[in-house]
Image (cartoon, rainbow, N blue to C red; front, top):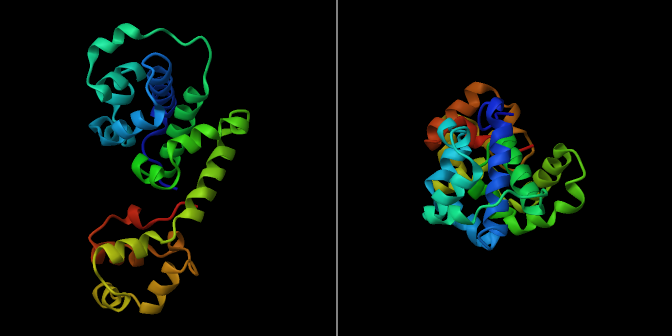
Amino acid sequence: MIHAYDKNYLSKAQNNLASMFDYVVYDLDEDLSLFFQKFLQSKICSQFERGESTVIVGKSGVELALEVMKDESLALKYRPAADRTPEYWCGWALAYFQWYTNLSFGEINNYIPISEILAMYSPYHEMDVSQFCDKMIELYNKRKNKTNLKALRLNAGLSQSELAEISDIPIRTIQQYEQNQKNINAAKAETVVKLAKALNCTVESLMEVV
């Protein structure tokens, strides 16, 4: 699986998202779901997803939260948390899942809202993070009713036969990938590259979370 960024940044990223969530809920009295929407709309979100060192390593979770909120005066309200809260775990686990799957935070939120992830604190905070990821992937795949290939084809306004003609891939093969009868992640590189070129997308965007 292709991860979102270098694993060397992962621990810091987890702690930053965890601290951000904890800070906005317990120090700023913000609703986590409302704050997360602000985060999704900020430039910090895309920078975080890519693991940019200036964001993940160069700043703390509190500093990132203040940038999202666009109010530096709120820093006066900060007090170090005595215990790790459910919100802290939520950020820590979500950062790991985003890194592990290379999905954007927005894509994750489309199928599994932050409030539901927070509700998973018990029992998953007592388990290995891999078990949390397994559950998240199960929920994501269950709720996502289209493969990436089908979604990208529809967005491009192409029929299966048109995509087959443009990409020089048999229509039956395209149907099998769209219906999950074949695993596109195991396809030949040449096949995926042809499809990506025809759809004007990246090879990574055609891969499925498994």
